[in-house]
Amino acid sequence: MKYNIITLTIVCLLGFILNVHASEAPTDMKEFNIKCPSNNLFPEFDRSYHECSHGFANKSCDLFVELFEKLIPEYDCQRSFDSTKDKKYIVPAIWLFGSAALEDYVNLLYKLASNKDKMYSDVFFHSAKEAARNIFISDKFTKILDGHLAEEYLPKVNKLKNKKR
Image 1 (tube, helix red, strand yellow):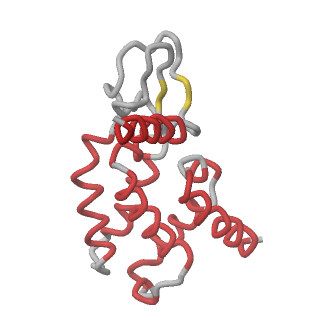
Image 2 (cartoon, helix red, strand yellow; image 1 turned 45 degrees about the vertical axis):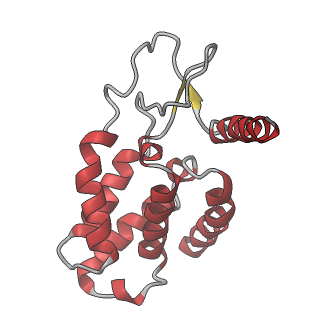
């Protein structure tokens, strides 16, 4: 019984922490995940992520960055735990892919934006790198960073912003 109470407490705390950056849904919003593009874009987004992360020079990095930007807004996106009896929340579409996947996607965006990975030094990646950098230093990007992602990447965002000046 003690294990169940501890587990329940941790799950409740995680739910609260994960909703820190979620927005309260408009009161007139009754249905969720109708306009949310995560399901429609996921196969193409994930394919472009994998191809880009392996350095394919087939414009997959351009597509990855383009789709990443489309997945940043909240739309009407909601995960199963973004709703309580009293409150309904909406979250960035990209959050619907899960924390581990989000971490991978953010890491690739950073690699493209920062010029830290020599694999992307070829001219084929120039436009993807420039677009990634613009997204990475944007306010709309920093809004999707939560918890340890915020701790790890906000200093990197600020460093890249300062380099741009």
